[in-house]
Length: 473
Image 1: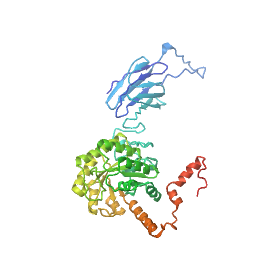
Image 2: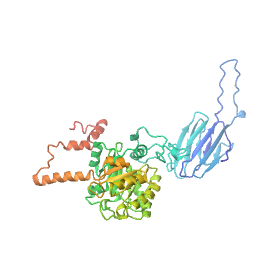
Image 3: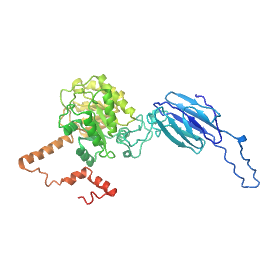
Image 4: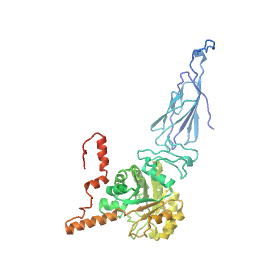
């Protein structure tokens, strides 16, 4: 128990305490308990009422205050006691009256938060931005009691520190994409089905069709942006730029799960990549155990790194997420089935789960029975199923995946392969017949532009009083 002493405050009810609170991983808390000031003299309403004598300087009744500053990180508490109104300690507290303002310096930056109380007790909390929890997040003694609110600047505060959440938001779509996806995984049981997208148009089409979660495929992004095969050629900058564009087309309507390949280097590189994905508003990403010169998961000859290197990637990603207090979901992917077999995949995924991965992904199931077995062995940990039609794995339908117990299902080539077939057919028709075959389909410029947000742009202009797009048809 920290020692507690009594402070006598002069009649002007003003106390100044200068405090230098060292930065800690947890926000320090200040609690103040003040006795109400002596009420001013009020003349009696009744002539028979006894007169209350006025107060002079010789009859001062000091305001007693107890101030306790607890540094949670160090587990220490300090108190100050003096009759002198100027007290040097570790915080700067001004004007302690029924309304008090506390300013706490964390050693490098000033963070201030004001608090008010009508009664005798006042609770004030400091808000250093580099602390692990935001002051608006109420944390109980048990981590399971932690429930927070998500800010809207792309950095998501923790909605819960464990799957046990004591309160849930009423409208999940008012939250950030990452927090929405985390909420769905923790508080729903249905299968989240995601079409593969690779550019702005494919993402807009998926949104228009009604999908709430999209998957940015690395193979599709490499083919679309670079015109190259999925051989680890796309750089981190390429992938971040594409993810940023797609995720923010309409972040209030859909969440984006993005391919992160191997993380593009060692732990330091992975940390930077995760930070950039968080800033890009990505809701989840998967990171894998292939060598840096990787290839598509459905090509032969894949090679994976050792389990130690793989887990170092998972740990680096987890640490980066925790440092940013982000809700972005970490999906641990293993491609070891082709080279090392199913049992090694289980060893790696279970270890990744222990390192803090939120979801697992075994790439390249050889049979449907193997897929169902993985779900049972890793339950209740959520698993993601990647379907690549005409790839190395059997075709599993949405209903089959739902019955098996998968939580997320991505169709990586759902946009890329049909686009290739349709574009190729139109170009061949043009090459051999001189027409594209589009005429009569009803698909013209306005139809495509409507899918890409034309009406939204017109509405923004009109609401601002502009006339640039008035009468557009």
